[in-house]
Image 1 (cartoon, rainbow, N blue to C red):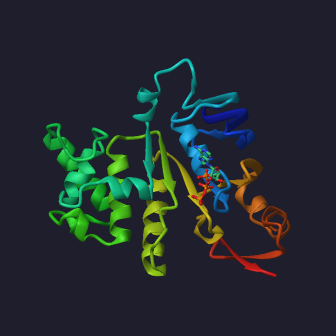
Image 2: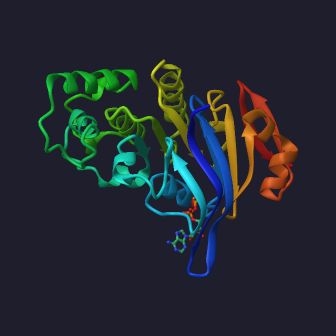
Length: 259
Ligand SMILES: Nc1ncnc2c1ncn2[C@@H]1O[C@H](COP(=O)(O)OP(=O)(O)OP(=O)(O)O)[C@@H](O)[C@H]1O
């Protein structure tokens, strides 16, 4: 089966500290994964590695079939969409929403290339798909946090990525905006041409049924990975958090409480 991510005993060390420790993890084509971990567990470090911004100190990684060290990482990055809060802060507030989405095709902050009529059409279609077509002609800075997240996902999709990384997309959203964004992500994943999605979060209840697999990261180690329903259960998560927790499944989502 074609692999989207293949990590083999990967470690990354900085300043005598091991930030990723012997991580082995495989994502097959067509699988959507959730990555769950507490603050400082190594999630961002892992994403930086998947995007080729850092390289393993030890071990091997290939992404979208390209083994690091044998491929131009700038080319690889064109196939990966990474939606994060830090990206949100870099974009220009005075740009129109559709310009922000269009710029995703060229991976630029601001739009400097000439977009074709087809590009414009695609941007509108993606805004429609993400439920934010009503924002056309508004400036980016006037949009709410939830609207910005949808625009950023549409922007990432402009480049037709094979891998889409959603890095804590529900941060800062009220519970209704969060549910609306999750519904958009659910719909997106159901499209026949959907990219593989990695969804990074601190919260189990954000892990939708489409995320068939989950990776637990703790202190830079892949604590466990596998089918979501086997990972998000009380004894596994109690071991993971080193605190007794109860998991209750409601609407096919796992809600956590401290016992
Ligand atoms: N370049 C670096 N040099 C030294 N330490 C680093 C470096 N980058 C990250 N760290 C440390 O590695 C650990 C993991 O950081 P990382 O940002 O990957 O965590 P995270 O799981 O994304 O956390 P959060 O959920 O809070 O965003 C932290 O203790 C962080 O301070």
